Image (tube, rainbow, N blue to C red):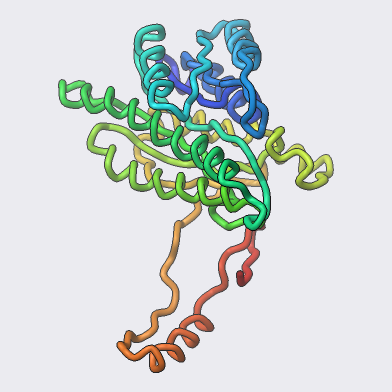
Length: 299
């Protein structure tokens, strides 16, 4: 018996890397999986059905059930097509894992309009579009008296939470996904839906060349550590957890506690009077958290 026996999942960006690991982990736990992947390069160009087909073949080889979907996850029609495929071909929809993403890293002064638009579209719009389309199904079930036990698991990033330089587009999109997840959790709970997000630390083609890792670090950055979190969050056992962001890798799972209030300055209508108060509040507040655990720094 698997944790997700009888459940149906959609995983976007599931042809490689983390998405592939998520799809396989869900299948190992008994879920039927819509394996979505456009098959583009890491920067978003091109299309190729082969990666999704290979993952489906792996799932079927282990005795699981899966179908290929090459829809554009960031399009309204593509999101609807995935939901329709899950319901019509696999018999329902219980789990959405929003994982699709691309990278166009540049310092913001060199970033083009297309660099910005493409990254924000693939990350943020795909997360919104698929969540929205899936939520329509779950709301109708709830209205009909069949309360779902559904899951949305989104993918944010440490870059979005803690602001890595050279990734203004990616960090903005991923920070937006973290906030979106918390809002969606508050809105969709009435329909039996939990919404959480993961900030993975894993070595995939999206992180190639960023840093040299020793063997121990590579082992701790294996995508399967993250996928274990996804598989559990997708299960009925996780029904009481919603609106959380989990930082995940082999070294441990940490819950990010969102923005926290720092020191407060007494208000004033006089800017000259207000200034020293703001400086004092600045010095009394902790520095922004850095991307490495325990690190804090000023801008």
